Amino acid sequence: MLLIVSVAWPGLLAALLIGAGTGLWAGLPAGRGPGLAAGLVALLALATAATAVAGLVPGREGFWVESAALMLAAYLFGCGLGGLGKGRRTSP
Image 1 (spheres, one colour):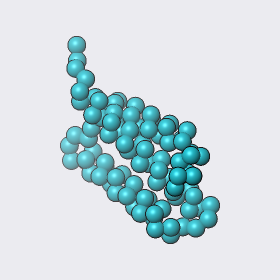
Image 2 (tube, one colour):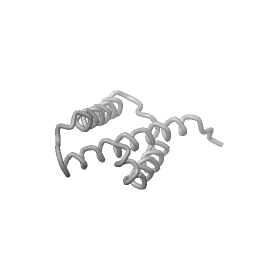
Image 3 (tube, one colour):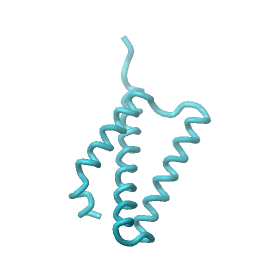
């Protein structure tokens, strides 16, 4: 996993920054529909991470699954940070 991070750090940084921008723009989920959608994406991230950790997919495709799990986790972390940042801003 450390090898993947050392190779894919530009993509991870981009995913984090895009997620932070998205979270800053959209804010935290408010209401039932957006909350369910956010929960579904988080569930997808957990399923992808579990697949990667279990090593269910071998070879090149396994690398893609592991990369996708890391990128999705970085994106979601960025979304959370951006959403928290939007809640702390004050309007003039």
